[in-house]
Length: 316
Image (cartoon, rainbow, N blue to C red; front, side, top):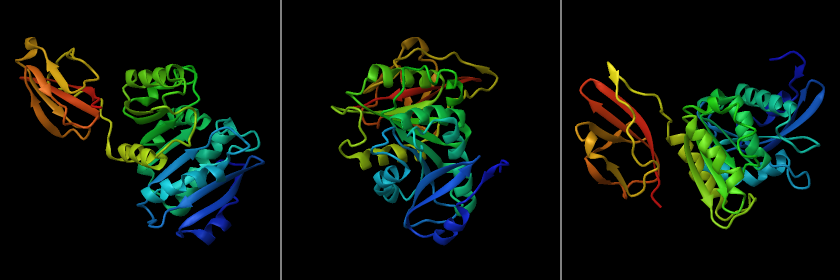
């Protein structure tokens, strides 16, 4: 642990280790006292229980680590995840340099004391917390298996374009209100992530503005979280002696996948996100209306030539 960072939470945490419920604590980060709040699910098991780092929005009249933890505690219990909520401090921002340092140290401390499952660590946040889910998350991409930005207060791609390369092979589930400036705060970031070879799923909430208080919030967050846990992101090419060029087909696809006749001599299979074979695709139209929306892959083979390319299916 870095010199000058004194952990003040250990005595307090030893009292509540392995007990269900809410608790708060503090850390001294280079002379600045930083607060946090957390939730331990009822079936917590050391080394097994997954964790979510949740970054709160910017509104000091309502939001801090404790109120954000309280807002998400039902979600955490439903999903049996250890909830870690750093506090942005007096200015309310969760993405200041001291706050990102604090978040990293807090996760390490929680892991050391509780033994959370670091291999399934997810980062999520709303508004400025959603922005930080992009910026902090992409700056520490290897620490997380996936990211859930909610109504991210992002300006196009300005804040993340230099970090986008770190999105490769990472899973994102973006939640955004249809009335929350989607042309600036949603679409550019989604496109950049896809272009950077991330696996991206999204949920646009109809008639919802910039708020975390949307209908069926816990169900929507649960769907996003479980999607992150159960969908691995594979974007690397599979090749033998030589590699086939990527085929030009509609992507995203909806209801059907059309395979052009000029590549009918190829063997083309549709795989799910776990690289499991779903079906063979034939020349012409192939019905996919029965498949759930999500990330899939086309495995294309011709003798010793192979290629795998990502395809997104959007069946509404």
